[in-house]
Structure formats: structure tokens, C-alpha cells
Image 1: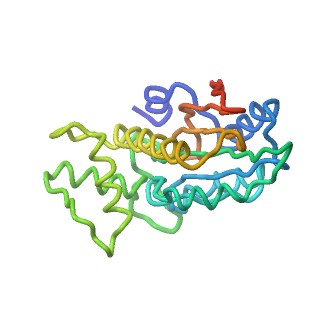
Image 2 (image 1 turned 90 degrees about the vertical axis):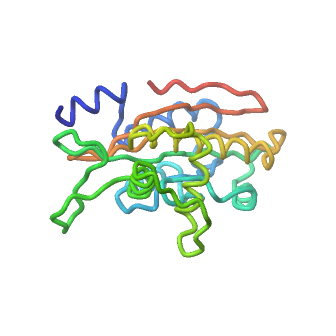
Length: 238
């Protein structure tokens, strides 16, 4: 299958990065979120090809708090989130936040998942490289479960994602990316529940997968919702 066929098969609806961030802004604005009273936070991969969406988020919301690590995992914890919770403008006695959680994956023009081309390099590359490396370890049957102080984030990825994978199962890269998304959102939500006072703060979580195609980047939206005055409301982006 070619790129377009693979994209359609595995992702029911995608937007360009600009369309996606603009659409999230448009659905949040009637609920009281805007660039003057809200600060964004982002969980995206460190990979340079992921940074395009960082620029779009900055354009729409202003400078964002960076929770990012390899694969976009949320490893900032309570200390990192608590730091961000003191940075929002206060409007009407409330702080307001929008959190973007977006691991990434590539699909090349031939439809090969996880494969991309990087400027100035002739050989094929992978995205997400950290998740691809972990997937290959699982496929080999040799996963290092110790903490490597010279490779802390990759060690944390292994430890965290293995909690989501049935024993003996080896997911492919697409499944592993979806698993990473689930873990990122879950960890962010758990930490929010321990740090955020919903009497003082409103927030939104915008989750999905960033997709690198042969002619540009796209986003597949997953679960998106707000918590305003302690009440959760689903956002429909699709």
C-alpha cells in the first residue's frame, strides 16, 4: 500500500498541524480559553522533525511549558507540573491551561510505517527512533530492565511501557505508538489529579499522534476534553 492508503487504513481523520492546533483553539475559545488567559504545555518528542508543531502551538497560544522527553513521554512528574501551574495568567480568579500530548510516527511514500527521510541524509531514518529501538529490543527477546544512568529517558520508556504490554506480546511500531499515547495521557492525568486544584484552575487535554508524511506533518486526534469549574466536557474535533 502507498502512503495515502496506509494513512486512511490506520487513521480515520487527520489534520495538518496548523489545522489541528487552530481547530483546538477554536473549540476551546467559546469555553473561555484564549491566548491571553491560557498557557499551553506540550508533551512531544525531542526529535527535530517533531518541532514543527511546537512552532504552531507557540503561534496560537504563545510560549508553552515544555514537558517533552524522548517519544513525548511525560516524565516531568509532580515537580514539573507544579512549576507550570504557577505560570498561567489569572483571569476571573482562575488559572487556565491546555496540555498537548502527541507522540509521533512516520509513514514514507511507499507506505512503510516508521520510515522517513531526513534532510541531508541519504539513508532511511526512523520515527519515533526511541520507540523503534524499544520495539526491536522486545522483538529480540532481550530487554534491559535496569536503569542506565547514561540513558535515563530510554530506560524510563522501557519501564513505563512494559506496564501496558501483556507479557510475551511484541507490538509493532504503530501499536507501540498508540500504547505510548495511552501512557502519556494516563500519567499526565494522574499527576494533574494530585497537583491541580480545580477550584482554582481550568484545563484542557488534547491528545493525538503526530504523523510525518512524505510531504508534510499531520495529526490524528485522540481523546480531547476540558475540565472547567471541575466539570469534564468532551471536545469533538473529528
